[in-house]
Image (cartoon, rainbow over all chains, first blue to last red; front, side, top):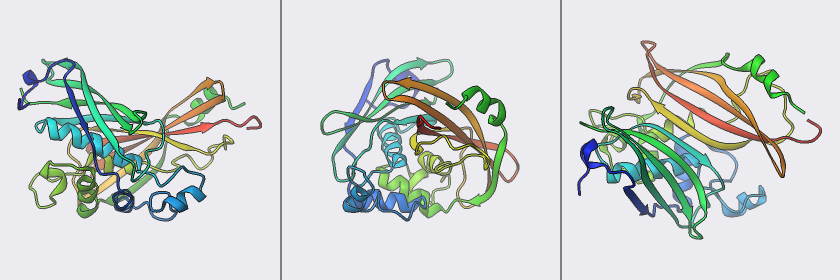
Length: 138
Length: 147
């Protein structure tokens, strides 16, 4: 079903899981795009381990990007008014993850819906969680 | 032990950084594309409604954004998370102004000791002094016993 207006959104509706690209090259290019250069935490597994990390990281803002993309893929008419993400544990580059969302509240008068958001690794462990408020056409 | 109430009284809601900047359309569209974004207004700089991708806005407040005289809390700050509130589309390629203040300070205690959370907020204005968005960056510091 195409979701085009607030009336199309139902409480408990789930989106995903979707598996975004966590390749090391993607993580490092994302870091470069926002000017995070220097250090190897986003560019090299070996270098990141030398910094005491379990491996090269997917930047937290890329994790937030995965969640925004998930919302827009399923609800193209949504405008994300607010998104809040908690970086609970590192998301490691080159390791698969799944991104999902569930609708937790709807305000038809204000044309807003609330979503809970999760990024989980292959073991099903939550690495990033958060919530978003979207606004929809009437 | 750091007195959180004292820190709040001294530092909350006082602007400590202000800077002018322009967001390169290529950089924000790259981040959107890498995220798997499909909406053209975020991935195509030529789109008439092109705007900055929210996670790119979140990146603006990254790093140790604290007042210059803010005391050391002992531990190494970690990135605890980020949020973005959109009020109006943030344009790329146009002058913007970012103003940063400490928005909240709070602590949580657990088995491994006390964690102190510092929330710095960057408010983003356009050239006409209109507030377009704000971005919160949460830094988490595990307090050391001697701090």
